[in-house]
Length: 266
Image (cartoon, rainbow, N blue to C red):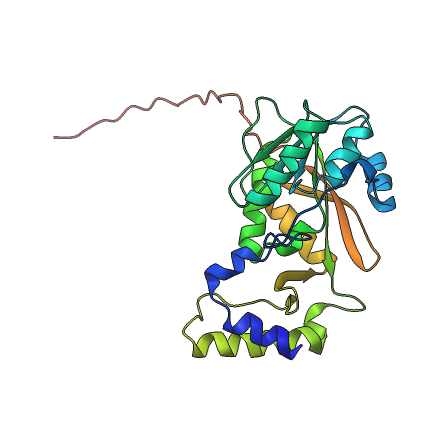
């Protein structure tokens, strides 16, 4: 807890953006073996329950290829987006050699490239949602995904959770948040504070946020999704559906205007 609080308090804001390459450290060699990947049990069950067969699926944070290749093998039409430059390059090279027709695009952090047609489903890979630092950034990220989905399209994402009880009721999270923010204010970084549930693993310099189900549901709702199901083991996952946010064109109303005679006395 102390190491996490110090790390979050001392680190510069711009440096946070280098800590979400989970599970790959881009300073080290990246080795892929996606031909041996299989969908984890929870993913298989969740996709079978929410994705229609042969759906077009957008996989976000798809570098590493675990979910992208596994969903491809399940018969879905998959398009991937990856934000890490080196992870994208290594993953794209593997695809070019083994699955040349499989699409993987590189994008700027948290942006989702526009597609010619809307996707029928989306999957945010490997707890990536927890590695986006601020709630407003996570909501913008979800909105970017929502803009590329058809109304009613399912979205599945996973994340780290506050086990046993809410984060703000656990000293592990509340004390490190208070300590980190005290340090940030002393250093003049009070405009960018950490939240309860934020944590950093000092040994891997890996920032992440722990959620309650209610927090995830609230951010999804703000971004234009309706939560369907939530479950957890040592991490949590949610299946939601995109709400139809297209403007409603009401028919023009014809309102009769009563005529009135106005007499003016001179």
